[in-house]
Image (cartoon, rainbow, N blue to C red; front, side, top):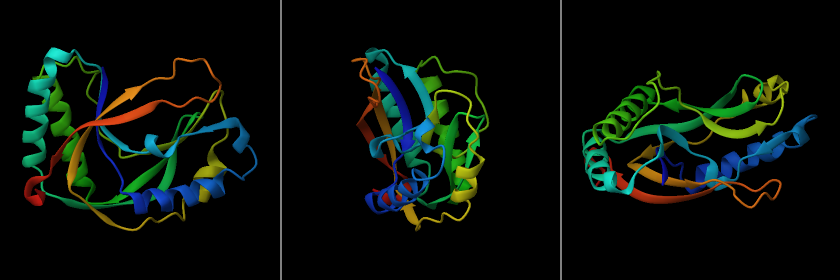
Length: 189
């Protein structure tokens, strides 16, 4: 199954983000972007790709330990940016050092459980809101996101999410996401 570890924004913050994305969708050039659906809006900590089911018990145990060793921390959706000319994202503000630490711990947990991970890179907090099929000038969207400030919440959980890629060939079909595991952070449980 295709898995990743993530921080999932609560419903209130998802609603704030939905309002901001709705404003972006009215900007010139917005029709060139494929907007992520609400279930697809998350902070990926460690992308694992295809994981063999026999690794799941050890992965769950190790992710649980990673969560237990990490204290709850404040976070909020904040500003925006882009990767290249095809990916538009919303950033984060709050205790980014702890978010980065949780990402490193989730990555290490997956590696130690035997998951074949891609090359390790320094974590950059981002929540993808849109992708383009071809090179697109994303600067007007980033400029519009500069003023975006979501309300603060306390991150209290590490989630393991399964993603199912579209297979029907229907244009615009989105991946489906299912939370398959969750562990409370440090003192949250």
